[in-house]
Amino acid sequence: MPARPKYQVFISSTYSDLREEREAVTWAILKDRHIPVGMENLTAMDDRGWKAIKSLIDRTDYYVLIVAGRYGSVDVSSGKSWTEQEYDYAREIGIPVLAFVREDQCITKAKMEREPAGQESLRRFVEKIGKHHYAKWHQSDDLVAAVSAALRQQIDTDIDSGKERPGWYRGDELPSPQTLEEFARLSTENDKLRAAVAETSLVTELRNSLDKAVIVETYQAGYAGARNVWKGILVECNSNFITIKVDGDKKSFSTRDMSLTKSHNPDMLVIQARLS
Image (cartoon, rainbow, N blue to C red):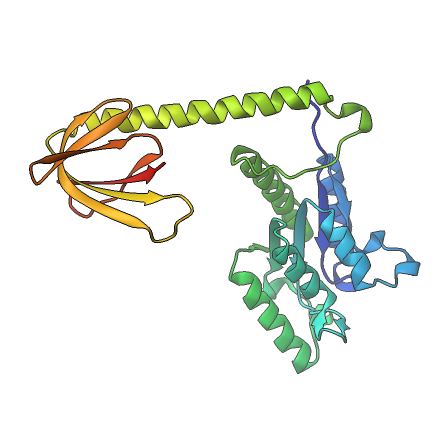
C-alpha cells in the first residue's frame, strides 16, 4: 500500500471568541489524519512574531480561515489584524485557502466588534475574502463538517490536477532513489504518450478536412511576435506534414508542435505551427 502523506493545515482566526470552534476543527483535522497548526504552536519566546508565523505558513499545505464577529488584534507595523496578515500571506505564496465566514444572525452581541473602526475593518476583510470564495457557517457542528468536506475535496482536486501538495511522510515511508528514478522515467513516458495521442488526433481531424479553407500561422520559438500567415486550401495530410495550396503553389508544414485554434468561421481551419 503506497504511503499516504499527512498534510499540514494552518488554522487562522481570532482566538478568544472562537476558542471552542478552533478546538473542534483541530480535532476534526486530526481525525482525518492531518496535522493542524496555528498560533497555539508558537511558544512564548516567539512573542507571536510575524517571522515565526510566516515560517509556519511556509511549511503549510492548506490554510483554513474562520471568521466570525471580530476583526482581532492589530499589528501596529502593518495596520492589519494578525488574521488578515496571515490570510494575505497564504494567498501571496499560493497556499490553497479554505475560508469560512459565520452568518451574522448567529453571532452573539458579546462576540461582535464594538468599535466602529473594528467593524469597518472586519467588513472590508470579509469583502476581500469574498473576491475569491468562502462558505457560510452557523454553529460549530456545521463548521466542522464543512471544513472536513472542503479539505478532502481540495486534496482530491489537487491530486487529480497534478498539483498535489508536498505533505509530510514518516522517514521509513519515503520512496527509495530507485523508485523516484522509476517515477521520473514513467512520467516522461506518459508525457510522450500524451503528446503522441494529441498529434494522432490532430492528424485524424485534418485528414477529415481535406479541400477545406485553411489559415496557417507559423511562429518560431523564442522570437516573440515573429509570425507569418498563410491562407489556402488543405490538399494533403499525413503523420509528418500537411500541404496547402496557396495561389496555385503548394507549401508544406511539419505536424510537429502543430495545433488547431478556434475559428469564428466554421468553414475555415486555423492552424498554429512552430518552425524548427
